[in-house]
Image (cartoon, rainbow, N blue to C red; front, side, top):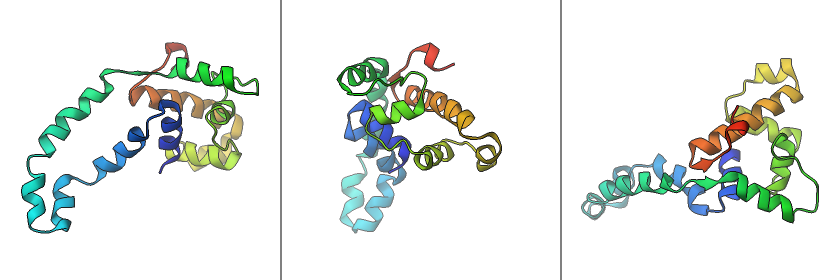
Length: 148
């Protein structure tokens, strides 16, 4: 599971969100081909309803700010998840070490060259904005000031 999928799953609180990208990777026809001759007949009508059901899920966006604010209220530490990727990761129960932040940044498109030349502070600022953007793109309702 990717670092971002793990983070998103902890915020959205829905294990199906974590499984969705994996399910999309293997088309039903590919799965059916490996299961034998009877599988294609069973799977043939399935792709259409599944494809139609998938767009319906994002119709109800997940209020990221409300969820994180509620988590913050219950957390023993005073965390500034709105500005700090370290605090955001701590809030959702993830390791916020430099290594894990670097892994997440690379996964989301930050280059190794930028990590080497710009340092961790700039990476952290970029990473926080990118995480908020990706949460928004994946069905999260994120306040505009966190997307800038």
